[in-house]
Image 1 (cartoon, rainbow, N blue to C red):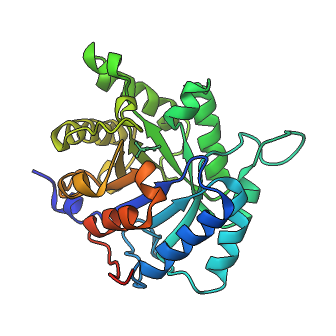
Image 2: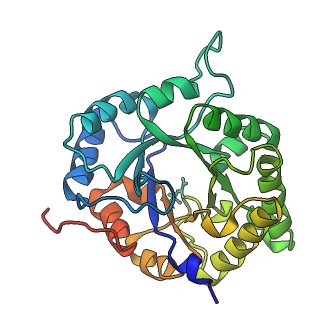
Length: 273
Ligand code: PEP
């Protein structure tokens, strides 16, 4: 049984565009999402001022443009923009990196850390912890991605792997600093294979327990699911009180698909095409 508090956690939907799309299409997509997401205040559960609950995480060249659009007032305040990655360093001689100070200045409210595509590119738990601290230092909420490979699930190591990935961050980030989690089983990312609601709930409960054991407020931590979330499976996943939203890759590149997921989360969307 979810606690009454758990049942009150508002849903959050974040679209991770990865290295897509080209400039003109990106502007069009952002414009369409901004036009069709209901312009109602975001709930205040996760932060006193009301934190956005629909997030777009584009490739970094879009950030400046989207920041200007959001500052211009034509974008509902409940839409936030975020970064897919963050440098461990704030500023300095770090060619090719983008640090938290700049990401913050260009309007990023959240930053992914530990996405499996970056873990596959060589990022260790230690680097991910440093990047998570860098986000926090800049005033950006880290959205830490954790999740097991298919082999780790099959061998029964799933919960231990997720626990290890979490512990690397929970062990260094002060407990009063915000931390959001995305559970993303690697075998479900970009594969069209989605974890069942039961599989997700099992891991989310374990994550929430680990957070609480680590001194954090597990019951007030948003834990999103990611892995081939589409309009068709979003309703059953998001109906679970344990699943606080979705991190959406492929389906976030199509406005209708993304907005159907936003709608499945109970966040308002206009039907106008
Ligand atoms: C992701 O990249 O975080 C993701 C969940 O991708 P997809 O929805 O395409 O599986």
